[in-house]
Amino acid sequence: MRNITHEEQDKLREIYKKRLQREKQIWISKVTGINHNTLSSFKNGKIDLYEYLYEKLEKYLLNN
Image (cartoon, rainbow, N blue to C red; front, side, top):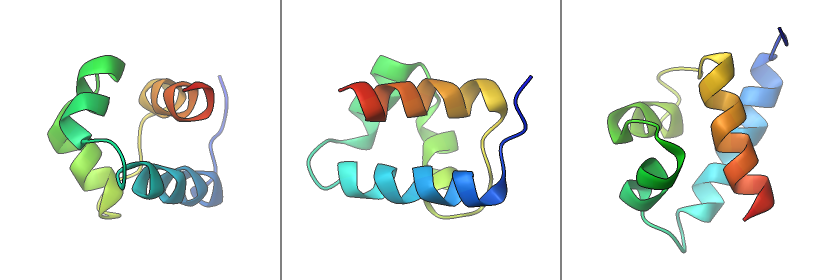
């Protein structure tokens, strides 16, 4: 089990926000399987993602 720091969450959050300039949140939700409300809360800094969700989003953002 990996311990994801708040700084790592913030870094992924910024990458995600930049990606939203060219892709819709609903599309990212569909391909990652992460609820769009969860993604919205993450984007707005209201929550940090659980490890398994973080890894799904990270994999998508860094490999696509």
